[in-house]
Image (cartoon, rainbow over the protein chains, first blue to last red):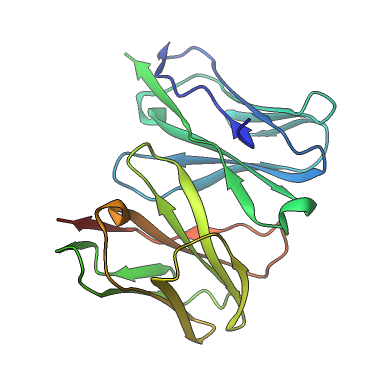
Length: 112
Length: 114
């Protein structure tokens, strides 16, 4: 089982709709959770971090964490064509000596 | 501009050669990292240094040797390059090694081994 799993996509969402990206992780003592956005040919850029159960909102982005289900998600409201990118879920756990483990990413495409 | 910078951006070389990639950050961060991103976009940590000391050393062939002359620089030297080393290598930095600190990535170096 991979440590951090994401559906590779592509996930196609119409402009203006809500895009929902999901991630599961295997290590129960994971403590820090991140969503990075990576445009094609560019470097990853942090868009959200979340550390406790529940929702965290920042503009059009909402991260949701459920530690009991070992699940973290990212919602993008009012999706724009500029949101088309690969979204990488990343997790840090105490048992991994605090190193960050990335999922393989979900490719999101916003269609006009 | 305050940033993480890497040189070169592209590197094309023959199998068996030795090459280096340089990384510098002017953010005043204590911790720096090297990541490898393969063709399937899987991003995996290779090394991490905190104040010039190695703190993370993943299962990476010993042909890869990082060097940190000071906390603002982390270079990666690769000996006897192999086809499988072809990937994009990203340098990153964070303020400290604390897990909640944001990691800032450099623009990447695309290495192609022929």
